[in-house]
Picture 1 (cartoon, rainbow, N blue to C red):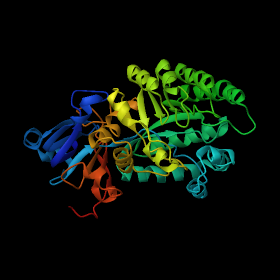
Picture 2: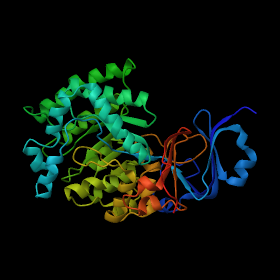
Picture 3: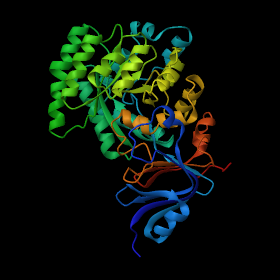
Picture 4: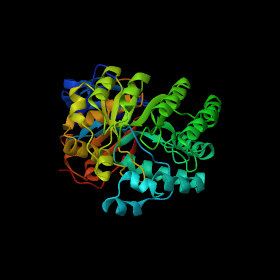
Length: 432
């Protein structure tokens, strides 16, 4: 009998479906009630899409093993959706390990920025880097993220601050998207900082009159796929008026609004994003109660980044207040030269310990809600029929071990699967 399906994962102790009724996100009490199938199986078709999820006896009665190209016996293991990292800056040259010592000695983020470090240091090195070198480093970083369970990653530009380098970065992201198995959501972040020697007004004008029109031409020609537009709305960077103008222009191009807001100072970025219909706002360490309420009403996702608050010793984002207000709370690693973290399991652990999220809230934040923040929850973030067959098989009987075992995800993760193909097989681990 010829094979008709790509992969069967059978007999898993738990299959964590997340949600099963086509929900685009989860909020409030729904976050605590994850859909979990005990002794479950997953069927993925030759098109890479999920065909069936359910109790093993039912699934295997309908889908005999001889119909599959590959069968994984997940006895004693768990299956979860592929993790989604909703905020990263993975294309850059020139690490900033020297700045870590400055921060440990008490320098703030803006102290480092004013001293010529931070974003400007990375901009200088990224402008000078050749595209093949940037692609090689991006490929390695995405590989680390994939091995830590991430199957969909948001990737930003933003270390060019002028057209040539911003396009170079977006082209590198596009090459990675076309050549690597990992799913990518591409973000233009040309307004990541005000270039040296320019005013906010001049930088804004360059983005509006030079960079965005050039990107529009490349997107229309099919050379680039760009999904989101980002601005660093912050005191000393882009103010509310500049942020509004850039985000509106990106929205008019068909880009999702997904930007940095209320990180170091309460800028009322949350209210602005809600007004503009932003899909997501990241950071929000200094968001006000009014901003939380506005985002909840607008269904604008909050992408929280516990690594950043941890490394910069900032106040933790008020995850509990957001969750109780009905916000759609997602998580991201904020991978960048300032916060070098490729691991969403570590992000989930920090979210639980430092932001007082529950483990179900953290898993939802790294799956369906993170997918929603990227406009991808119709295809990613849960194990439902019709969605991409992206999943992670854990070498443990309960899924919570992925969060509970601090720094242990390399041993907990057995398989990472994208569209039904095994892209990482960690066969050198022992069951526990």
